[in-house]
Image (cartoon, rainbow, N blue to C red; front, side, top):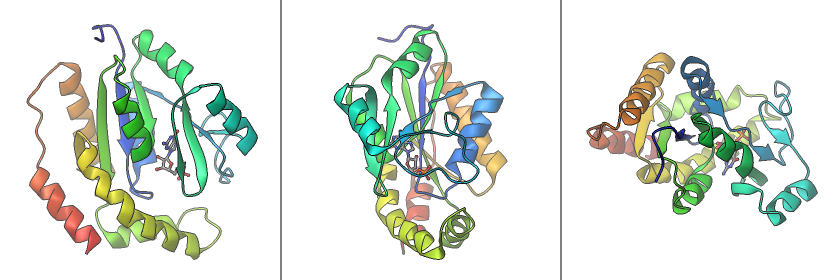
Length: 211
Ligand code: 5GP
């Protein structure tokens, strides 16, 4: 059982391009949550800083971390490996700090299946429309538009995992979406059991996104 003084784990997942990273940064800043910095074998984008956005490592370093049982979870996403180091996260939770994770559905599933003693809240972030999603993916620092098209294909697979999450939010307005997540976290921290969200609305929205 987690104690009153332990921190909680808040996981945000989404198909690529739903604006989750911006939400994670906003939550960290406004609510003073710590962000778990993952390891990845992906190449850094031009605006990314090693040690802040990710720990950028090669395959060999990553494989060693797996062998030495350093990861709380890890997964292959878009042909690269991503993983969350166990120790820094557990240290923070023990100290009563809340930790935010920007990880995919595979990692979320692994963390949830471990029966760790800390409270876990999971959110799945959806884009407002297919068009907005494609625009966001195309505007990134990516080699060419082909990658945006590839990630659109992955979107159809990833979006199906919304059903595994405690809460699903639509990111049509950053501040509104932030407020919604923030309110749910606050209610949950106060052990309020009656947190509801409109599942039918979400299910209809997913149908629209995938048709
Ligand atoms: P990106 O390459 O765009 O930064 O991230 C690609 C995907 O990998 C995103 O869905 C992101 O949430 C996920 N991701 C980032 N770090 C981790 C991690 O440590 N573990 C897992 N399972 N997924 C991660």
